[in-house]
Amino acid sequence: MRRAAGLAAVLALTLTACGGAGPEGDADVTLDVVVADYGQRTARSTTDYWKRLVDTFEKQHPDIAVHLDPVPYTRLDKTVAARVAAGDAPDIAQSGVFAPYAAKGQLYSADETLSIGTQADFVPALAKAGEISHVQYGMPFSSSTPRLFYNKKLFARAGIEGPPTSWAGIERAAAALKAAGVRTPYALQTGPEAAEDETLSWLLGNNGGYVGMSGGYTLDSAENTAALTAVRDGLVAPGLTGPKGPALNRTEAYRGFVAGKVGMLLAHPVLIPMADRAHVPYGTAPFPRRAGDAATPAGLSDWLVAFKRHQHVRQIGTFLDFLYRTDNAVHYAGGQGTLPVTVPAAQKMRADAVYRPLWPFVDQLPEVQFQPMGRTSWPRVRAALQEKIAGAVSRDGDPAAVLSGLQNEADNRGAVVNEG
Image (cartoon, rainbow, N blue to C red):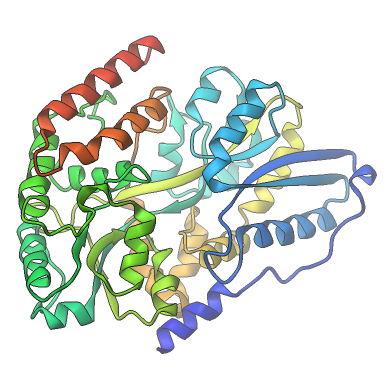
């Protein structure tokens, strides 16, 4: 209870500076900034955070005004893409993609906008994931990595002593949970909402992944086929993934866990405050490799991209350097259930016991492997994967055939955009 109360206090923190600068007309330049609005998913809304940040920035930089445009996260990428297509690109946008814009020469690189110190502060794995041909265009902002959450009360009812440390252990635990009457022993989130995230964790757990060492797609590799076959045969076919099976979406899975109807699931730290408010007795553990030990963790990030349209490179850099200051980065991560994207912010969070529930997630961050965000074909390949992967692991699914089809899709898309 003390841990939950401490984290809740942290999640309620706001930036200490309030107030704002004069009207936009008093500034030399007005930056147009599009950001994601995630609503009231924690103690403070994302839009509230941004407004307070902008107020503080404008007070310190009266020559630069910021026009903030919060967009519901479900419409964010489409909104940014529509504005760019209409010739109305913002100066800065939060986005799930960056490669298509960079390929068309529409973005400033991190080298052109950020100070050397700010750029050097990024967690290396995150900075690398934002690169195309060793040039960083995607600047990480809202990052995360999942762990295996489990309901301690349900585990005790099923006679399970601790979290599983192998895939066989996940299957045994799920079977015991089902026998104890748990509605969804393992919440397999391969519905279209976030299938690519859940899938990547399973692929990495069998030494697979979306791309190989050369950077080319390896969707139909033997390791990937074996991973999805194991999920189908070990969890879905025995009925251990609940009423919706592999069609389950992330939002439904999280709600089920908070309601005490899910025994275990892969989840991001944003689930922590939700579980704390519902008084769910949970624990977390690394997602295991198939044969045992911790698997390479998957990573997620939203990116900030800087568009060239208005040629406000100096002002963009000034705002981004302010945004990535350690205190600001910690406030956002701690307040939104995400993880800090800079090393100094991660160190500060790791040294503060109030953030103890987030420490295991922070510790995973340097080792994460991301989806191939630097490939312009990835958004369409991802969309195809979201549509088809649940069918691959369904009771009568054919993982080899689905992965082969996805590989063909990836190869064809890559050829169209001349990816190497």
